[in-house]
Amino acid sequence: MITPPFRIPVEVRMRPGVLSDLAAYLNGLPDDGLLLVTDAGVAGTSWFKALRSHLPEHTIEVDIEPNPRIGTVDRIANEARSRGDQVVLAIGGGSVLDAGKAVAMLLANNGSCKDYVGKNQFPNAAAPFIAVPTTCGTGSEVTWVSVLSEPDTGTKWSVKGDGMFPTAAFVDADVIETLPAPLIAATGMDAMTHAIEAYIARQANPASDALALQAIRLLVQYLGPCVRQPERSEYRMRVMHASTLAGMAFGNADVGAVHCLSEGVGGMLDHPHGLLNTLLLVPVLRYQMPDIRDRLKEISAFLGAPMPETFLERLETMIKGFPIGSWADLEISPDLFGEIAARAESNGSNPSNRKDMKAVDYHRILAGLAA
Ligand SMILES: [Fe+2]
Picture 1: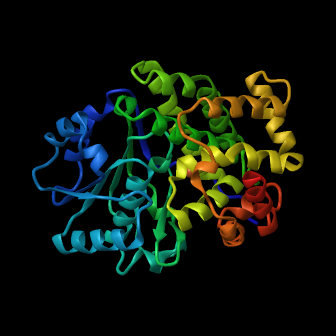
Picture 2: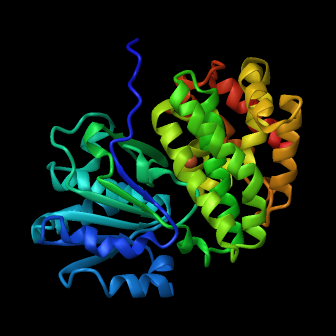
Picture 3: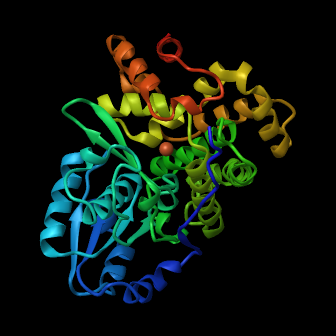
């Protein structure tokens, strides 16, 4: 296999308050048809309303549901094509950014997202796409991938390629001040999962390692305080920056079994991505321990913890302190375990696991969680 290069071909701006530069940045882009993709939660915030008043008058605003659907993205792209929209601005969490990224790709390519599932399946580079994350977990603002749902089959599909990296990312920690504590916790733990899985992935490299370790350190130190006191700007900034660093790490090294399993569950049952990763992270890492021990030991040493087990216990304590509920609250029927496990094995990131993971492994993890 050819070693993939390390790349982040995105203009990244990271600073509290940096959204005040967005309108001036947009002035330098094509002047016709700005498509603004967001969701109702973001659209109701005071900071968004203030920002919206500075956007071009010919901005069209569309709303995205959680776990964005291929049908929604196709419909929005068709309408945008017929209007002649040229630029996509997405302001929201992972669902909004993934949807906006796919719409930008479809502005330059005919047909449906479904035609381009997989890697580099579309011929033309996407239209200019600007990503503004409003949660502290997705990392989508610096990656080339869009994960979309197909409710009819309960499947999650990935569309990705060299031409799908965002043109620019505006990472402004001030926007998470009003995010509810459970969302800060769950999306922050999604970022933690990105960083840890990137570090233990087969394709990890020195550059992704450096980003992953720094993201893990920041999240271990600041995520708990940020959940409790989001009004503290320093906590917000550390967590938000960790999220983008983790995105750069997994965007180059990939994720692993936690995401394979969470996407299997999320595709079938529509539970939030960050919440699933939060609840699956420690059980999946424990299951893989013999094969990932050396890599986890390096993370532990970086944090000053003596053993990988100590690091996992620290994570476990942190997660138990978050207001997010438990795995049992999700009430996942054991009848679904076989299908979820099969989907996890067929996930595109499954080969990135340092430990070979088969459906039977995923089934054992689910059974252990249900016991
Ligand atoms: Fe994730």
